Image (tube, rainbow, N blue to C red; front, side, top):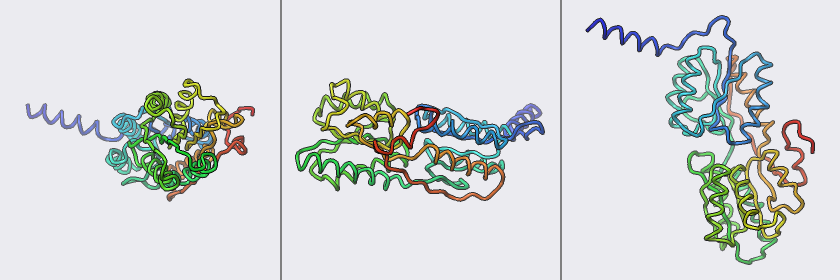
Length: 316
């Protein structure tokens, strides 16, 4: 029995040891986002892959589907491979990533944060989400003052509280609108995905059909709202409506460029800029070079400059 117990302990210890990389194993770097449903993240991965592979690394990605335990297990698997030289990621829950980040560090794998920094990361690509939300709100406030001129207005702000990035963007949007149009009715409408946005907008419009201003911390959920409005017989150029979000893809840009579109603008990061920073940080960390925090700021996207934000081989 004692011998069996010793063998079991030996087996457990053996499993816990990170397998050394084989001499013929290609070095790799990994990028982890919350899921595959966010178009901006997919654009970044598409832009990053050829750069990473040209540098001689295998490019690993995952799809945790916004499940914390799945993201943690993905990272553990990468650590165990033995050939991963650096990991970068947006944490679904930063606190939950601390232990696996420590495991990576102990295995000699630096971890880079995307949009969020947490204990153990070597550096992070960072933004100022609350300030970004407030900035977007100023454009919405200006439009409301110009087009409603003191008349009653109802505003819906799509919200998400699962992580600091989205929570702070929502806070910035809410505080900015509350300060700019204090007499307006402002509703927080929880929505994460495009499907959430569609369903939430349908439900909200049933109770508050006079809501004409829709703002989002993201863009996929806002496209759900856009579809819900059209299905509710709102015209795509109705002058009473104002939609604006943060982040854009080619699909959003097409909507923004519709003449007199209800989807007026966005305050967004260019995927090519984010992808470039991601690659630079990942490759530097993989090579053992020192890395430091990099701050990026979003740009204002309007019908006049939207063509500058397209990604991929799309003719516009």
